[in-house]
Length: 248
Image 1 (spheres, one colour):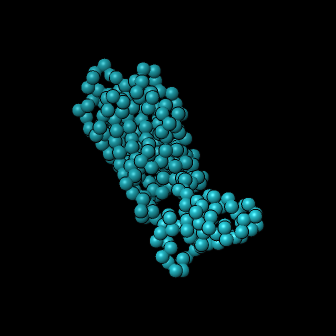
Image 2: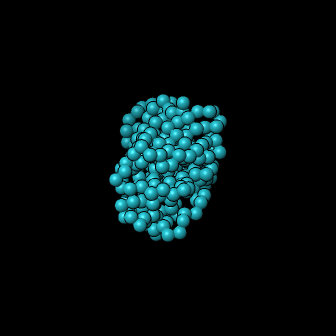
Image 3: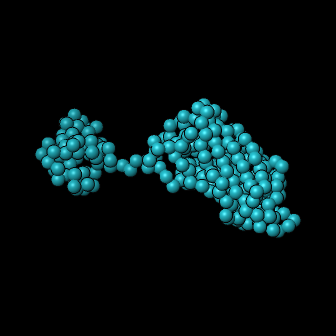
């Protein structure tokens, strides 16, 4: 059995996982490896400034054990609301003409809840089948929009559990039409409750999904899509995001 003096020479040279493993060898090694001096040596390599405090707030062993590994993303707790608690008020305008106006139950917008019509472009099909979380809805009846018209969208969401309403998109224009991906896009910045003062800059994106029209200056809209991919890429993440809105 190695003497304590020899171990005291070796232990400061070890990396954290190896020093922790030494505590499982035998009672002698366990008692010796618990000495905070050895863990201070490790902390001195990682965070030298922590060793300049003559009375550190926690032991060096606890400091190293707590912070030496990069923390992986924590598992998201179940959201406090569900899509069943929500209904969306969606209105789409072309100049002063109302093109689309529906009250949409939350579950109806669940991703992959419908099949797009045949004939859509492969790029758009690939997008809709992609892993990114998106809320989609078929447009029935379909509508056509000339490029010359100014198209805008408003989206409100209501909670059945509290009878409150929040704004997701407030009369935002479809400023960008991507003929490659067959989507017209609009966005607005979400307004969060004052309870979350440091949450900002997160956008709600709204897309018109369209197909080729006999008139190349017109888009033939067959569906709509909404996503929050700036910050949320799953149903639970979207529900947490919506729960944080400024509900009135």
